[in-house]
Amino acid sequence: MAQKYVSILQAMQQGSGSVSIHGWVWRERGSNKLKFVTLRDSTQVIQCVFEAVDFASRWSEIDKIQVEAALEITGEIKKDERAPTGYEIHVTDFTVVGKSENFPIGKDLSVEFLADNRHLWLRSRKMTAMLKIRSTVFGAIDEYFKGEGFYEYHSPIFQAVQCEGGSELFKVDYFGRKDIFLAQTWQLYAEPAIFALEKIYTIAPSFRAEKSVTSRHLTEYWHAEMEMAWSTFADIQMHGEKLLKHIFTRVLEKNRGELEILGRDVSKLEPIVTKPFIHMTYTDALKILKEKCGMDIEWGKDLRTIEEERLSSLYDVPVICSNYPKKVKAFYMKEDPADPRTVQGCDFLAPEGFGEIIGGSQREEDLEEIKKRLVEQGEKPEEYEFYLDTRRYGSVPHGGFGLGVERVIRWVCGFDTIKDAIPFPRNPERFKP
Image (cartoon, rainbow, N blue to C red; front, top):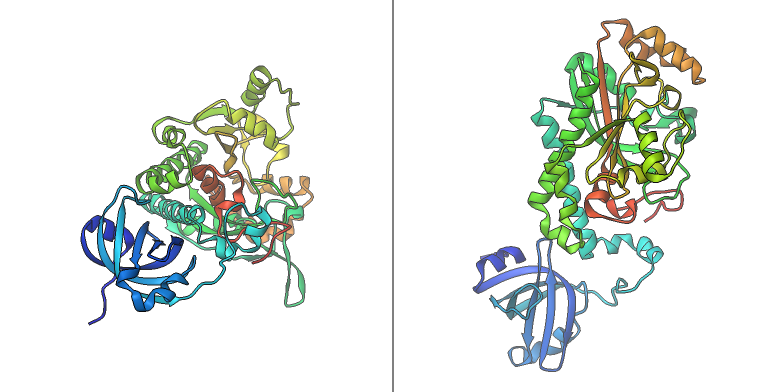
């Protein structure tokens, strides 16, 4: 009969008696009489004790066990307050499933070395904690939208028109064609689908050819986007706030252990769930920045990272900043009827200096206005004919937003850099492993 293995967490929950577990060596130390191996799996770590008197004929094998060797272990589990996680297994039998010699990841290594060995660094407790939180975040996004009656929808990665700006496009050789790009966003291909499904969302990779090597930019990242027919601008902001609250609720429910491993102060996350977000216009933001931060910004200039960080640092919940100047926003954003200089667009700025998390808007539904805006921005309307058709046949008020998933994960985890929020980060300087 095959041996039944349980997870380390399940073994700890059992608390006593015989257990069989398998995992990888996280730490090891010992003498000629005792060997202490801290084994890890995806659920927890536990100290396992080998005594020489029990393994006289196999002690040389035990003595050679190194960090990251894969083991199967059977033994007696008991509580022990001195052990790293409060439990200890006295080993009665073991199998070395996979040897490991001179594992290169240890303490006090450079960021560059860890990046070069990312495939191994993923095994660290920090990265494992991030990966679990990341899984919760993705699941919460999916759960929220399905719970709100949205359909999951997918748009092409290869696209023939740009949406966010030509300088940030990755051009690809598409069977000899040079005018095809990797998707910056699903939006131009999502809007046609709302006339069929009305409320749609996606979680998909997006690509930005930004040469910025900063703590908040990646060239390949995961994008959670939504689009809905019959919306108002207030609807878009409402869904953004509810989505973030749902994400943080799920993380606080499921990942407090991982947050503790990361040293994250959960008291800074709890207000996101319990308090309403701050609403202000771009014009209000300029006044606040001048009065409270001593930053005098000319009306009409977009907010830079430093200004977003200073503004959001004044609050313990996100700031929803709306009604930006039309000239600094995309052609598809709808003018505000009360102030045609501005658009019904918004950015969600996270506290603690984590910056923009969501960008959204009510979309312009008027065909002629869109053509005009495209020309103003140096684009050729004839290249957007498929998109313009959505305004020719039954156009309705609609809007949507995009959320940078890694930016949310970085914020949740409290990381200094967004590169720690994804298994294999990509930026202008990093494309492998």
